[in-house]
Length: 195
Image (cartoon, rainbow, N blue to C red; front, side, top):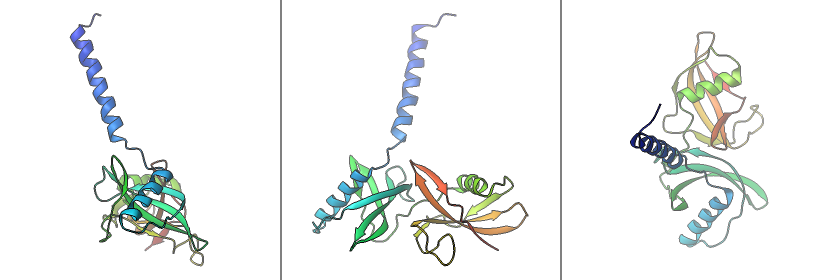
């Protein structure tokens, strides 16, 4: 079978455009060094040149606002010898920059219903679980107040809530704890289940 030069050119162009779309849609997440640069630039611009040294980055989440350019990253720093974690909204405009968010409108986005269902099923080991809806459509809440047991505080992570029809046919509220690694969500095993 012979193909015309026009057909081959169109095929190559269509393949090229598909490759360009996938590359431009897949934004690289900021590194710890890029977040540190953004923090330093923000502090200098706001008249607070005293440096803060970040000691770690514990994952970046998609944001509820301007999803194409904005992420919320969890960072660690030492303040007076004690390690602290906080979330930082960042936007990409030629480089990563801190987004000033006085109204706290930018939240980390929880996994959507389908993603949460897949994660909960994996953690619980049961395919009969069905997530009916998200309880946090405007984003989750970062907390370290809840841990693997009620007596011990947990790590700083994103708390997301879902209404779930479990394999026993009961509707329950599942309180889950979410992290990210390499741009992928993961769910901790300590899910709280409320009647």
